Image 1: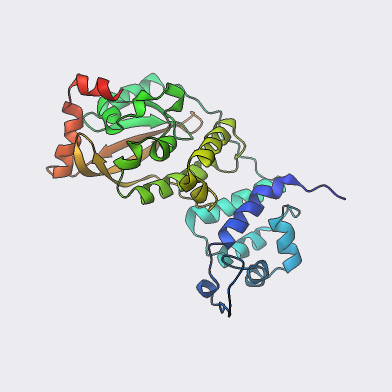
Image 2 (image 1 turned 30 degrees about the vertical axis):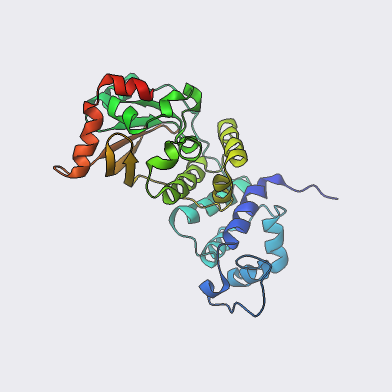
Length: 290
C-alpha cells in the first residue's frame, strides 16, 4: 500500500473543518428531509459546487492528493464562501501541500530591542505591550502591565495572552463579551501560525489549552482565521472599571513575528479617564498585580 503524503494533512483538515461550517441552504442546496449525519456540506456536495470529482476531493481531504491547481483551490474557496484571511489561508496550505511554499518565517525572537523598549515608554500614558508571534507577552510599559492584572504573577515563559484569556481567572472576566474575545484570539492564533503548525512553541501552547479548556478545543477545531491589525476591546477592569479602548497592532521587522500593541481612547471620554487611571495607579498596586 502506498504511503500517504503527510504534506496535505493540514490542508485536508482545513477543508473538512470549513466544510462543516457551510449549510446546504447557504449555497442554494436543499437541506433534504431527515437528520443529516454530516455537519455542513457533504463531500459530494462540495465537490459538485467546486466542479471536481468526488474521488478527487476525497483524496484531497485525506491528504492523498497534494498538488491541487490554483484554479481548483479558487473553486473550493468560492464553494466554501471563504473571504479575506480564510481564503488566503486555503491558498497557503495548498502551496504547503504541493511543496511550493517557500516563504519561511523568520527565526522567532523573545528579546525585545532597546529601541522598541524606548517606544513603549514614549507612548505613555497609553497602555502598550510587545508580544511574540504566538502571543507571549515579552515587554510592557507600566499602564500596559496594569491593563493585564494577574498576568505577571505567572512565570515569565507562561505569560501568554491566549493562555491568559482561557486559563487565568482574571483573564476570563477582564474582557466583555468574553466569548467574542476568545473566538477572535483563537482565530488570530491560527492566522499567525500560518502553515508552520509544527512549531514547538505553538504545539506546546495548543496542546496545553486543548487539555485544559474545552472552549479552546472547540474553537481551534473550527479553523477560523482572522489576522488582526487593530480594533476595539471592552474591559471590565478590576481597578480602572469598565472601559472600551481601540488598539493598533504594529509588526516589528526582523523579529520573527513580534508585534507592538497600543491602546487608546477618545479624548475627554469616560473611557479615556478610566484608561489614564492605569498610568496614575501607585506602584504598590502594580506590585500586588505582579
